[in-house]
Length: 282
Image (cartoon, rainbow, N blue to C red; front, side, top):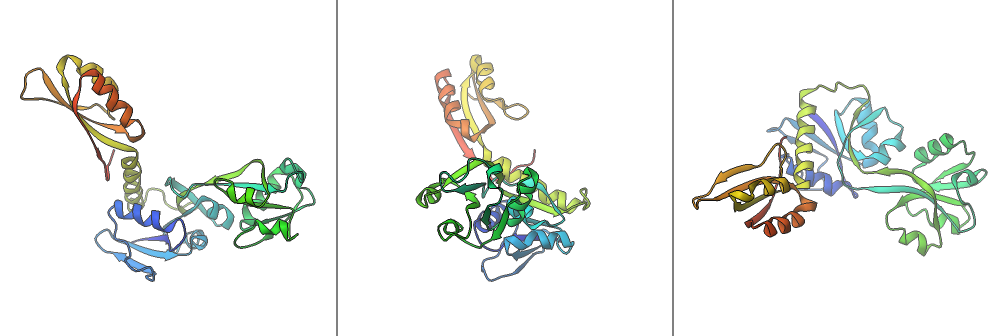
């Protein structure tokens, strides 16, 4: 039975559970459950603190896990990313008061406060910067105001909280993070159970980025219509009862769907419909 670590709380938890549900796996109904066995899919889920997941997976006690790329890198665990999942995206950056520094090289001799000391220490070492790193949990913005540090390193989304604290971001991002599937470094990549799990998640990822589009068009306009909706291999085309008309079905990128519908309508296509795709295998 495949043993999988899943975030038990935080920004990773809900989207991870939703994706697993869409992939056909049972998920817990009570947030207090720590273990859930899904016998139909031969999977056992362990709900753990996101920061601990890389450690458990690296130990070999669990086969794979879902966590953040930032948490994986910060842990220093013997684990590796095998599939990005596209949610819980964030950017990790330095910030300080205006006039304190203009680039990372200026941090020499300063103290940097962060909740991710592993990532920051490695980044500074890679840049050849000799600075101190102090670990804080929670809102690190106050570290500068209270004189604990001259610089902070934290997740930046809109930058509003930094501006409200009178801070500005410095230099390029340290890293960009998102939810990822991880495994122990060097683990068997051909394990059929792991491959099936990854295919299911990949199917959900693809399904989320496409819609199924159906429409009717005149046969003489078919080649132009197909050029707008080529599908993955090619669209499905069927004759309609009314002579000279055909029905077309194809997968279309969701972000382009409205534009494609407009172009098809201008071409003379009618009965243009889009439907969500919940899962797929390509």
